[in-house]
Length: 293
Ligand SMILES: [Fe+2]
Image (cartoon, rainbow, N blue to C red; front, side, top):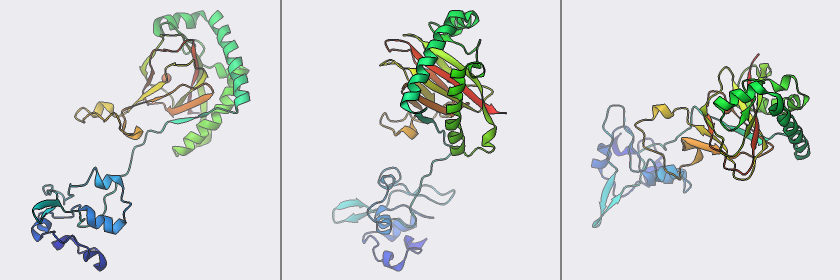
């Protein structure tokens, strides 16, 4: 594209950086990025991306070598030419991994529900010998009814109330994910987890389900949150680590704090874990799965 300005309005062509040489334009086949013309095009509010990530790089036609940043002599100083030959780059996020978080219900009723759950949790611990045995092997230091009483919502009015309230959130989340047949998603499992100080839950995912979630009942100060891992982590061996200051959407591990009364939802294939509980007291939660029925 000779001169690089052929597709720009005539008024913008006149704003072409005075020092841009024909040699520079010829070195950038296809279209090359040059910030000052893009700024003239888009005003002063160009995204930071333009001045950071892509500035100085030139997009080229397929198969051609990347062009060097456009520069030209201005007096004795060599200055980067900030003119776009054509187009403004855009970056879009695809293949999202949404995580949903919200308070389950109004504060007063949530408080009542949590009290009822704690009473039933103590009852479960007192008679669920199979669950205690299983927890001793697979959930050291804590108790979970996952393997022994994994459908609490089917025989306890307390947990069926939790199911009713959770349904609303699951439906909202499924709608956000643009699932078809929203009404066919039902709670299939629901179990309680009690994690005293030091108990942890290793990296895992929830098989045979579509959406999963956790509702927090008791969360002592300093207790661990829930940590999610980028599902593409095993495909990024050659990628450099992300900066500590990387925005949340670019991190490979994110942690959500555990807050009593809140529900967190995710797609069941997303791996997650709970670090050892450092809070002073039991961290109590109810986990559940939803699946097509
Ligand atoms: Fe889990």
